[in-house]
Structure formats: structure tokens, C-alpha cells
Amino acid sequence: MGCFRLFIYAAVVMAAALGVIAFFALRPEVDTSDLSEVVVSDRDRTELNIRLAGINAKIDQSKKTGVSVPVHISISETELASKIDAWSGEKLFTEFRDLRAHFKEDTLVIVGTMRIGRFDFPFRNDISFRIDTGARSLELVRMQIGGLFLPGPLRAGLVGLAERSVDAGFPRPPIEVETLLFSEDTLVISGSTRG
Image (tube, one colour):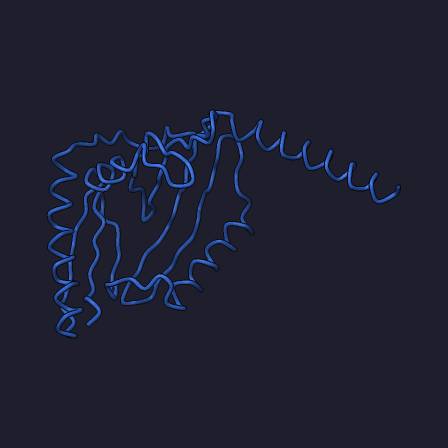
């Protein structure tokens, strides 16, 4: 009888905790006032897709020949925002809507709304990353869903997991990135294909 009461007590506590989390996650308190307006366009997405197709051709050629080829691409904030916006409405484990990408001081900011069931969860992720002469730094500055913020230790744990995965070769990017830097409104990536 004692185990059953303990189980009921644990279930009630879990339900209450999930209710509190859902309450704060559903609150639309994602502040985007520090972000500029980014206008997305089919033209920007098309131009980026053309440049990415050229890089994919280099990657395919390197796979066939085994010879590395230098790669350099500049992506504007509006091009990346247009590409990410095209993913809006796609269903992964949830449906994403109103996705936008912003560049801010070596930080990529992604904002949007996740739809799970009939509930909308606004979110904001601020990801600071940089690769300079092969040395990388990555930090999840902010992960927010509604009025909930992911605490620093959990963000650091996610970064550590991502870095260990990349170091272990999963996923193995087709480009050996030497430099990944943000300028005013441009992301610049330089490196070479894996031969």
C-alpha cells in the first residue's frame, strides 16, 4: 500500500510540475525588440540555393576524385532568413512557423513558433559561434520557450554534447571549416571539401 501512495504522490507532483512548465512555456514573452526587421524573399533564397548547389557540386567532385577543393561562401542575413523561412510549416517532431534568422555580434538568433498539438510555443535561441583558423567556440547564450529560459548548466551540457558528437564524426560535415565568422550582416565560411 505504501508503494502505491508513493506512486500517486509522485504522479501528482509530476503533473503539477508539467502544468507549471506548460503555463510558462505557453506565455508569449519572447522579446525580439533588440532584433532588426529581416525581410525574406524568394529571390534571396534562390540566390543562396544557386551558390549552395555550386558548393554541393564541389563536394560531389571531391568525393569522386578524393582531392580536396577550397570552398568559400558568404551568406547574408536576408539570404539565411529566407532559407530558414522556407522551412516554416515543415513538420519534424513539431511544426515550425514564422522562423527568422538574425545576425547579432557573432551570434545567430533564431526566433519562431513551435506548434505542438493545438498549442503554440514562441521560442528564441541565441547561438554564439565562431571558427577561426580551425579553433571553434560555441555557446548557447539563450534558449527560451515562452516565459521559460533553459538554465546555464543545461545549455552548457547541450553544447558539450554537440561538440563531442562533432569530434566523434557524427555528423561528419562534408566541408572542413577553417573559418566561420560574422561580419556586419554576413556569415562567411571558408574551408575545403573532404577528399
